Amino acid sequence: QVQLMESGGGSVETGGSLRLSCAASVPTYCDYDMSWYRQASEREREFVSSVGRDGSITYADSVKGRFTITRDNADNTIYLQMNELKAEDTAMYYCYVKGRPRPDRDALRRARCAALEAWGQGTLVTVSS
Image 1: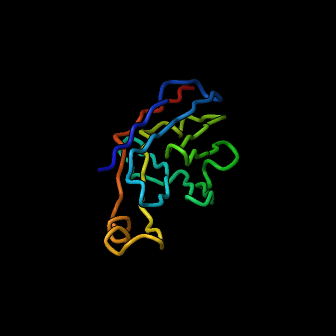
Image 2: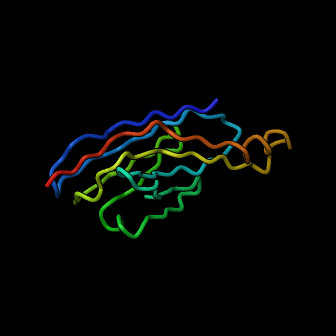
């Protein structure tokens, strides 16, 4: 029911830039918060950035001022522009979608939206010094 297509990972040198994208195929009767997480080798998955349907944005402290998240609501796509990349940014980056119910929808659809969440398969970012 939900499909996420991530792209844009790759290998860059320290100080370089990459742009990730995540296109979500989702039911149209929900709203969605969309986020990026990352997981480095032998570490737990961690939050990177999120953007709500209303445009509200949050960043992890480690990426503030370097990463920029944007969203195209027309096609449920988010982007993560990553600048000034550091070796510690090396990780698998995952897109995450969380459904939010719309008040104008019936109870069944609202419940489905509230329960809806999905992870992408990840795109690898490698930053070498």
